[in-house]
Image (cartoon, rainbow, N blue to C red; front, top):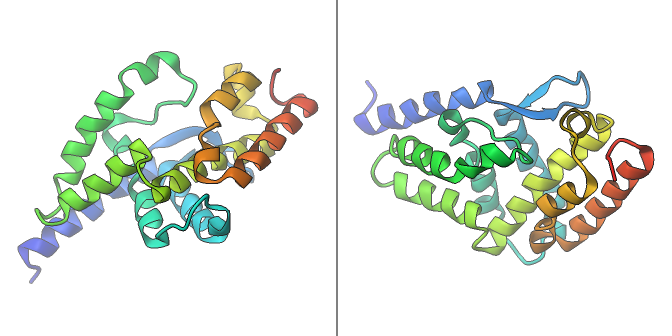
Length: 196
């Protein structure tokens, strides 16, 4: 029979399974359906392992992976807010804080503060690990937008300046990846898939 601790942990596991049903505005390259948050988190985790040499500083890769696997769990309650949605972003922080309180509060008392602290650290980009994780979180949608011919950008009328402003902190966590991202943004404009 499961212990109370194991039952609590598995309750959290089942709750965060709902992340598979939270859909983002970004489209997948293959079939152009909307990406879900669980796919996004997996993709970022793989990128973190493969691209760690581009981190601005030495990072604790396990810590980065933990951040990337939990960074969007709050969207189970708060929903996914489109990066360029001015109105939706006004109360995003409040909605996500409330969601973090509830969701991380489902963990055992000794685990809840540690996972909540990781989420807070990621959100605030307080460490080299958080800045690297946040850089990947911005780079991945850029890649998907570029390789789906700017479908989400075009659907929402997004312009180059908006993309640069939203993503420039990639340079904090991975300067070489920001340089690549700037080239990708310029190429998107040249291809006509991102408005100047």
